[in-house]
Length: 77
Image 1 (cartoon, rainbow, N blue to C red):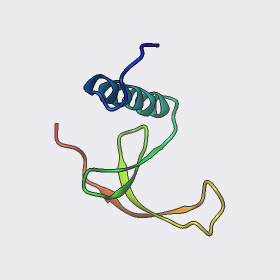
Image 2 (cartoon, rainbow, N blue to C red; image 1 turned 90 degrees about the horizontal axis):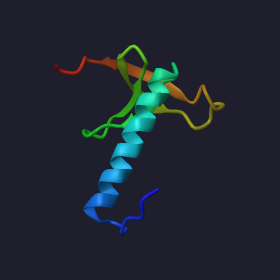
Image 3 (tube, helix red, strand yellow; image 1 turned 135 degrees about the horizontal axis):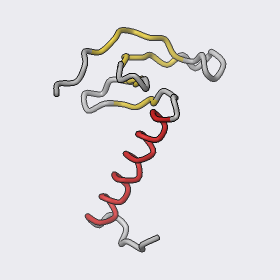
């Protein structure tokens, strides 16, 4: 593992690349990925590419602690 100066461009790129790799591996494993998009929406993305806006429900058990608000339009190619 390379050593990077914290908050350097190289460090930021390494974090971005690692995060993106984990995102893709999770989808490839058949699991949904939850994230906040660039517009501030809480999103659940499924392995088939469909994306949904979700609302968190912290009083529900883990795995059932979100409600689907709506499906988000497919990304532009």
